[in-house]
Length: 135
Image (cartoon, rainbow, N blue to C red):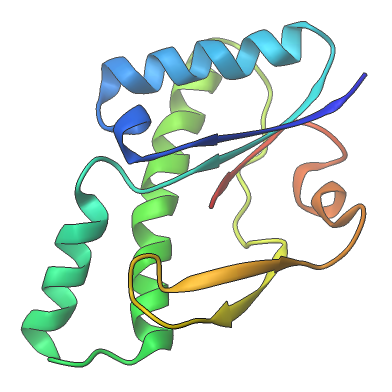
C-alpha cells in the first residue's frame, strides 16, 4: 500500500462533470489499496474572481486576509468533491485545516507557499489514510 497525493487544479474541478471525473480518479486509487490525499484548487477562474473582489475593497489587500480568501475558494472545491465521493459510497475525511505552516511569499497568485510540518503530518489530518484537503 502506498500513500498517493493527487493535486487537481481549477480547470479539473471547475464544474460537476469535472468533479465527477476527479472523484473517479481518486476512488480508483483507493480501490487499488492505496491511501489517498487529494489537494484541490479553487474552481475555474474562482481565484481570479476572489482577488478582484479583494481589490474592490482594498487596493493593496493584506497578505494574511488575502490568504484566508484564497483558502475559502479551495475549501469550496474540497467540499464539493467530498460530496461527490460520499455519494459514490466512499468513506472520507474532509480536512478542516491544513497540515502545513503558511509562509507568505512575493506575489499574489498564489499568495503563499507551504512547508510540510514533517513526516506523518497528514495522518493526523486524514485518519492515517483517505482524505481531502484544499491545497
